[in-house]
Image (cartoon, rainbow, N blue to C red; front, side, top):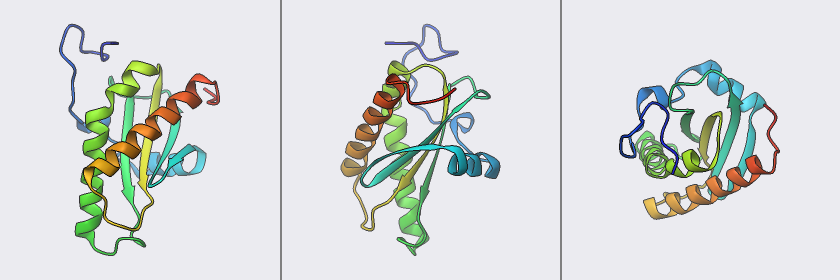
Length: 140
């Protein structure tokens, strides 16, 4: 297993720090305008190869449609599930790809999911993303 950048000799890190999160409006707009997407219902991953990245190598953000979930409580619950699934499974990305990427996870479903559904979809999206990267479908 590859070691995480900046964490030589330490155990796997499962956190999701502020440096790993996409926060700026410009970054989000760039992902939506220039990003490449991979979908496995009910998730869509929009990704973009980046040069400026934190020491983690990846940045991620989550989004849930206000159209499908009027209640902020429900949207926030789904976003928490998405972040938790990413946090627990991001080692799949660290172990299988090189370079820096920005990710945006969109929840496309119209019904409230449980964690098992989100995690299953997240792993499928990761697998398809890794296959695309390894096939050379991403321009630097």
